[in-house]
Length: 101
Image (cartoon, rainbow, N blue to C red; front, side, top):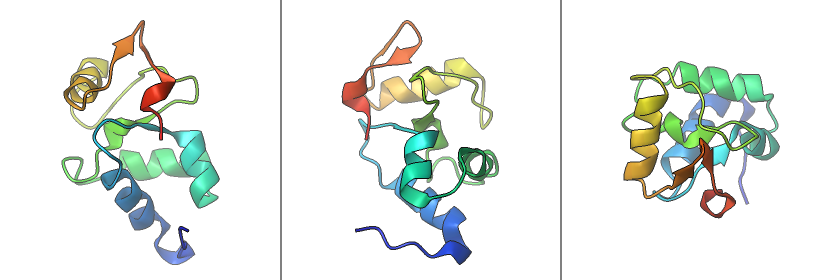
């Protein structure tokens, strides 16, 4: 059971992302369900992530399972490369549900 500390939600979200298995991704909505904060808050946490090599924000994707804009390093191409390096298959810009947390 995940115990939430509302005063440090940003770090808790980042830690959760850090601890995702290499072959898994998660949606903004699923993080919203887990942490009870709006998906825009999740997006803000990802946007201001200062350590993407530790907290892999590229593993957070949209609700429609599509690979979309990624701002930490390069555009979508970089996100796809990172996901593929995590053994995640992308077909027609979408990630199969078997890779979801």
